[in-house]
Image (cartoon, rainbow, N blue to C red; front, side):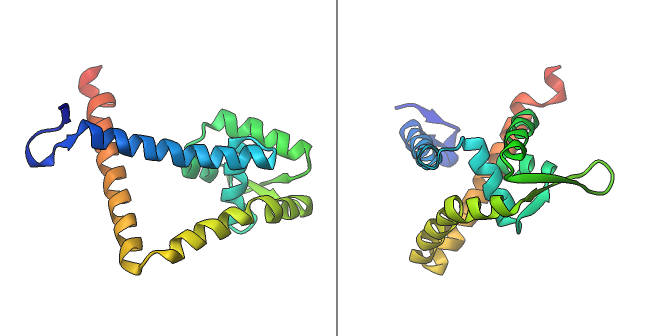
Length: 159
């Protein structure tokens, strides 16, 4: 049996694989939702963040919260502007604010709000302890992943 890590902190290969498959299945479900909505994954993620932030947010924040490249976000926002779903507003300095138009608010209410409702339904089916555990372990995993990726791929020693 393959193992990743050493000692008590090791994770069996099959457990890692199961986690990877579950994460992939969850991403696939969101992708299927976007397809049924008739929009791309990136557009869905952008509208999700803007809606979550109160119908407007900094363009740089969208990239940070979604992990989508700036280039992809720029392209998707240009399309959303053309479709009159969003408009851009100049913020302080180089910050650009992406805002939903009235048409964009209606579109998001129809397409994105149901995602919030589904996620809230799932969240509310969990106990407070399950919610806390999920957040704690997800943050712990994210932080460890960042740490080990930094050590492995972004270390100055590699250069």
